[in-house]
Length: 445
Image 1 (tube, rainbow, N blue to C red):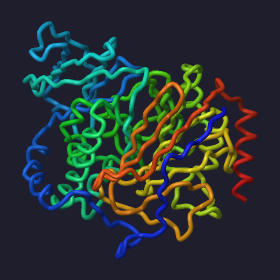
Image 2: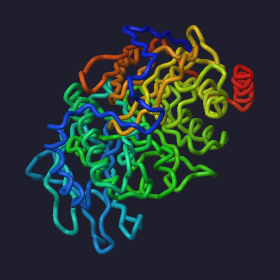
Image 3: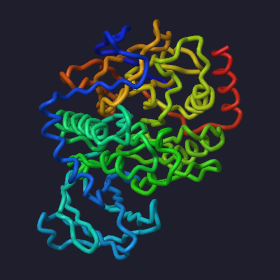
């Protein structure tokens, strides 16, 4: 795989703001007036027992839906139309199964949708139809994807306190509003994991799904370490092409999907089985060997800016060697609550024109930040650990993936770059995996 990385603008931040401690301090982009306007909405957010999620389908022209209902609501229904009046609405099959805390998980797949068209959907909430809600299937020849991570509702303090949940949720709403104001025609969003602070919290789940914009924007969510130990993630997100994993977690497994000429693969990096990860990558690439761009999302970053050159990274050894073999162009991660971007990396080292770029997102809500080390590792090109939420917009064109990262308090661009001149191979074999693993290992010794 050949590529070049063109840096359009670059900001390196080497120090923390005065007074920041090493862990667990929040930093929100909104002011007290915004929080005051948002706080009264909390009760209605928690009163919504059937908040719905949208996720990308297996390919463009497909959107997936999921919502929870009470155990007595055994006849969930869903319909879709091109008319807000729901005239000529088509009923879609609802797949329902037992979910967390005695609830029922309802899932629907809408396929065969036309690009550029707006659709309306409605579903039953304990027998009552919801108000029709629109979504637009964006064209797939050139499209934009929004990337965030670690909304982690409840992380900024004692998660049992309502005031903590309210301010984290307000921060998440603020970021979503900023993203969609700047990119109203985004095809979908990607979350790098840790959507919730506790994996079984219905309260935090409702808060994460509560932004009104998410009723019309599919989000591809990733299993973070805070989402991993309960079924809630799998109950409320309807992911396509889930791949069997021998060491699957309660939350679920890796999955993949396409949009235009890009293949997106989502890895559960809590599962450090080399064979499970290889299986997800292999199935995805085998199903779509000719896609120009290959993008992986995983929660833990093998090349986090929080690591120094001397730090050993288990994630780097396990995952990056596979990404070298499967010609992954871009890896999106979170976990360390700071923004960073790497050089083009291959075999554990900087590469001139062949390898993978690793991008790590900061807190999406402002609920938590980690500091940078005193000196940045040689593989880090750009880093930003000011206590301000960030998001990155990736625009996929015929010739490049164009990345632009924003801070949400000022809307200023803190990093921008391009990945181009890509040529992907179709897959990998066991020999290449072994060689790549040893190459990466020796680079860290």
